[in-house]
Figure 1 (cartoon, rainbow, N blue to C red):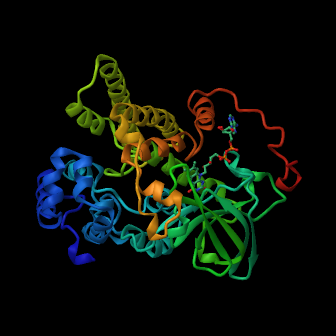
Figure 2: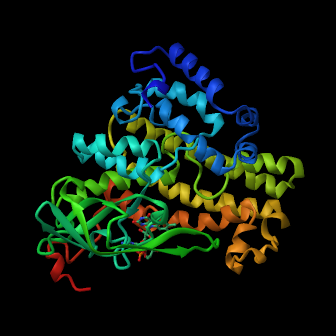
Figure 3: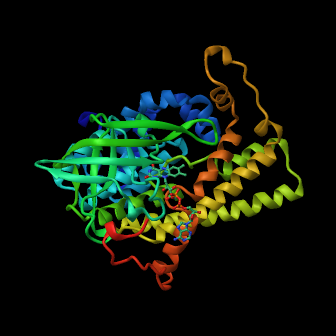
Amino acid sequence: MKSDRLRIDATSTDEEVRASVTEWVTEHVPQAWRDAAPDGRWAIREVRPRRDYEAWYPTFAASGLAVATWPVEYGGLGLSPANAQVAEAILAPLNLGRLNPLGLHNTAPALFAHGSEEQRLRFLPPMVANRERWCQMFSEPGAGSDLASLAMRAERDGDEWVLTGQKVWSTWAHESEFAICLARTDPTVPKRRGITYFLVDLSSPGVQVRPLRHIGGEIDFNEVWLTEVRVPDFHRVGAAGDGWRVAASTLAGERQMVAGAGSGGVDRIGGGGIEDLLKRTKDTGVGPVERDRLMRLYCEEMVRTWTNERVRATVKTGETPGPAASIGKVHQGQLNQALQLAATDMLGMASVAWYRSDRAEGKDLLETWAAGMPHAAKGMLRSRANTIEGGTTEVNKNVIGEKVLGLPREPDPCHDMAWQDVPR
Ligand SMILES: Cc1cc2nc3c(=O)[nH]c(=O)nc-3n(C[C@H](O)[C@H](O)[C@H](O)COP(=O)(O)OP(=O)(O)OC[C@H]3O[C@@H](n4cnc5c(N)ncnc54)[C@H](O)[C@@H]3O)c2cc1C
């Protein structure tokens, strides 16, 4: 992997970074993808099936460009934020999305802020290379918005912990090797103080992953049952009982990602952006009402971009964006839903009616229906989750109210009560 890495670092000039990245793109990014880039993401998607991208991805990871500001020993190039921006300006039009987003955005921030050096060296390089894929097991049937009331138990047994309980909504658990997981290690203290943060190997005995089908007919998330799963103490991040603080790094990274302020090139969650819609409606033509709708969406999209740039700038100064990421998250959720709905309306029948007749292949009706679904319909259905995932809009508004505007906290009569005594 080392020999394929670009020979630039934090001391390189803008010119050196530009030359090195341009040369790498010419040598390593397939010609057809480069040719499609000026026509935007839709055009790139046409010539770049996901399986081709996954097969090519190790080349990108080995260059160090996927996480350019990370230190070399963790899989990056150690570029300064300003250098990385120069590199990103060349890469962005190629839409080189980073694979393993729940590793890069949810797990890595916790390891950087609270993990040991041994843990970072063990887990970050295979994460960058997408050799070990990650998912997040925080939510439970009785603990979503009120995550701190989670009930999964973890008990210490020598150099190991034994975890038992149920998680739900665990995105990509069915195709991940590892999960970040919160469990209760001390039920005798108030809920936020008795939680510990673990890295769980999903191939461990006692892990059962049950896929759930979503509104678009596909499988993205799962319920996961842990029955006396043994986790080595080396896989504990932060001190026992300090998991709530560790989880804060993960949740801020997640809000950033869902808001679209993650590392450059990450695909928008749930359909294409305003540029895609403008491009597609240019050929068909639109009336004055649609024109007005497109303009409003375009302005909102600009606000979203600038909000995310502010959050990114905070991250680049080495600070965590904290509650400010909630602003982008709330805005992005609502905007993306409006955008996807507009796309469905404006693209007409092509986005709402489809038929596929390959039931003979042994697929059930739902799978057949989902497989034939046009991109616009998929984007519209998927976007319904944008105001729930990564913390609901209502809960993020509470965060903004309390932490950004300084309004009084929501009353919580059980705040100082031991978790085990809280009525439920
Ligand atoms: C597509 C998708 C993927 C997800 N992926 C993951 C994942 O990978 N890992 C993971 O751990 N979790 C994941 N989640 C779970 C997600 O974090 C939770 O769904 C979310 O936090 C809400 O929790 P809940 O579903 O239990 O709803 P609840 O907390 O039960 O909320 C129900 C309703 O009550 C409102 N509400 C609750 N509390 C308040 C309050 N204090 N003030 C005002 N309104 C309130 C909510 O806004 C909501 O409308 C995913 C969710 C979705 C939709």
